[in-house]
Image (tube, rainbow, N blue to C red):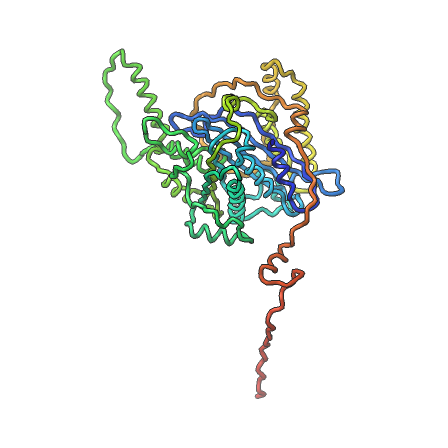
Length: 510
């Protein structure tokens, strides 16, 4: 089952009479060296970009409008047989009918990668990580100005993510083929465990159906039951902080780790070292010593800061104490990587493209077009943006299909000649970028980039589903029923209360 089919199946139970249209873009694997930039040596990591666009077509309407967008990435570390699914952004435009399909779509994505039989990449251990931060808009520019959009507040968003991950963990544990080892971690910087528990419980309107699941308030870097993605160092050498915490784009952990890596001990001022005569045969050894010194300089204070101290200091970061409650979530799943463990399935290269995958530049172009050339502040603009963007995705598949597939160099030059869209004033607010790190050059990919075609578009990218399910009861009626209301959603007759009115004291005539 492809990711598109799994997401369509997850939308089949959304309440209401509706028709959904989905576009799923998954890039081919490529090498990436900045996931663990301060690990020595750096592990081999293969990255895939994921973009999901969901639109809804109202009944008796010929046009459809984008409602939900998800941007994620999957990192494969073969050395430890670990995978990391990082959910970067989830956004809704506010133009969907009630109830919103965002919850079902996110659960479908997490459940697809949590299921080893559906996961396209064979890994024995999976980590799902995300950073929850409430914001008016992420992927739909100017959607915060639309009156129909009501984004969740900070505590509501954190509680929503905890509920979604709890459902994913419960579904994973309920599989018949042997339950895997599942661990759930969360941290609300600046709040104690008791404060975080009370805050999230108070922010959720209905109690969680998976109260028996055990959540660990803290980070996952001290446990050993589920292997961490970064491989251990040989000869039992001590790890630095860069071996534990992965670096993702637009992630406060990565920016803080960059600052620690470039922070040196400025308290003590040492005198310059005295130069000594150097024999001619010591150039090679000196060159190696200089490389080691440069490596230690890049690491900065990473070897002195433990994961516990790192998370304690995260509570004082500006992104975590700006008046908005944020949260870090991690779900670890350890179990068999999949039913097919034949020699052919394991021996193939992790860089080999699979059916349905597209070139990474295609995903980047669609994201840049969405965030820089469209806006969703009104219904008319959202409809026009949906029609243009969905037509562009199909047009990219049609144009690329005409390019000859045999000459690799010709195909590569055509894709490079396509200009990237420039920046615009419609830019989503985001935190400052990470500090640039000096990384070695990546060796070229031995496999050519996949060429999307109309067959790829109709078989793996685009799909639609029509649902006809009963609507849930209104929230007011459900809340009234929970408080002991009678039939019909009306409040039950309580004890009669007599209202007394104060009588004014008459003034005696003087």
